[in-house]
Image (cartoon, rainbow, N blue to C red; front, side, top):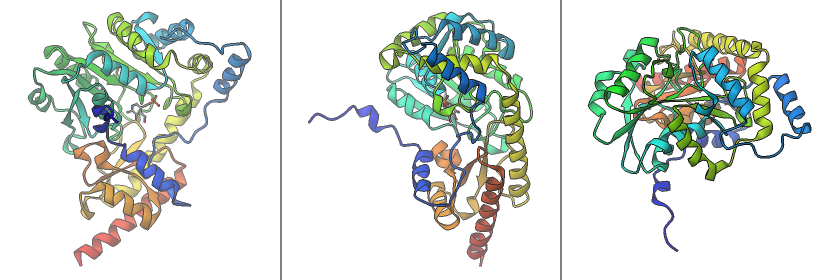
Length: 388
Ligand SMILES: Cc1ncc(COP(=O)(O)O)c(C=O)c1O
């Protein structure tokens, strides 16, 4: 038989998923490997989905999403993100991951280069390969609190560079870029004539600082903002996200989306309308709970010298286990077997993740604390043995 598409062989399996599967086979283990909120979707959103199904919202919607939802999103983007956009600039799809993929597909041709954060969410790299493009990692260094360095970025731009992808608040670093940094990144993109894809799925989960949408600084329609319902409303399994971009980019993304998905689930779109228009108390409560967990994690890991940086947003923390070696994949597997704590290996997020493990704060607090204590004891024991 003829070989399958070559570009698929370039897509690495996410180390998060691999650890998740190993953890499933480890009864009683503490799950800190995956970024799936342990909260339930707000009751009024669930009720709205039932109501929508009963009311007959069971057919296809337009590819770009229900007009009523896009209208509600335009309002949300104006009020919460400060973006003056029309519903025609919005594409609704099954998860932010789909919006990110469409954003890359709409801008990248085979051979083009895309600048991706390292450490960064591994799916970016996979999506770039699926487009036939070349991912070029730009390092976010621990010494700078995982903030981007424009000089480093400048050196990585080539005549083939087409897209700069940024993610704030960030998975896995917990970094939150300041408004000045976001502005500088948009200006950098303009200076080098790049599209800027801004992944803002953790926009509502900020402990210190403020989240500012890159679109606020966009002067000529080069920013593609990617947002979702998964993290904000604990709706990962519902699969709903959206992009906001210029009309031209959005029309291109809609054309590309059609042969893949037809549209997002109509029932879920109606539930999303309820999420937007209803009480936002649950969003605030979840953020407060993540912050309490963040504080608890900092209290345990920082005095032991194991915290790479204090997360200021999103719901992850990077644990520095480099005293035991740099191969984070092997370290994550050993931690699972020896201490029954599942984490995500740092290098699944890029080369800068060597010697690091990512833990997710989307776990019940006492389990999270117990997991952190086990990590501290484990490192102390191993390190003591090595030193001796
Ligand atoms: C940085 C980042 N972007 C996008 C996503 C995908 O979100 P969604 O569930 O809306 O596809 C995730 C999920 O973990 C993420 O961490």
